[in-house]
Image 1 (cartoon, rainbow, N blue to C red):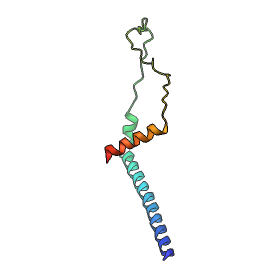
Image 2: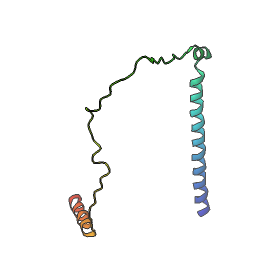
Image 3: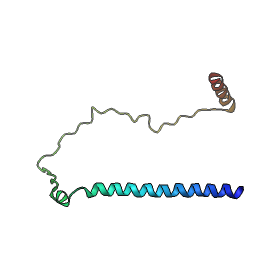
Image 4: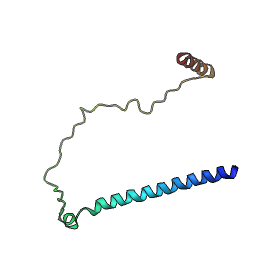
Length: 99
């Protein structure tokens, strides 16, 4: 009976592994067929536009006065003193509220 159970578990694991392999192969074929649908002529006809950089324009005045300072509390450390009795009291309150 034990060998039958081990054989059955092995067979299920093997089948799941094969299914995973088959599914991944099918997904790959689907993605390949999508790419194959585009003609090479269409790919070659697509041209990218060059980025135009105008060197005659530049920024002279940058003002940061309207920006809000939000990093004042960064780096501050708060310490709390919790002991076992307060933790058990909190747990008891949660159990009362739940139950």
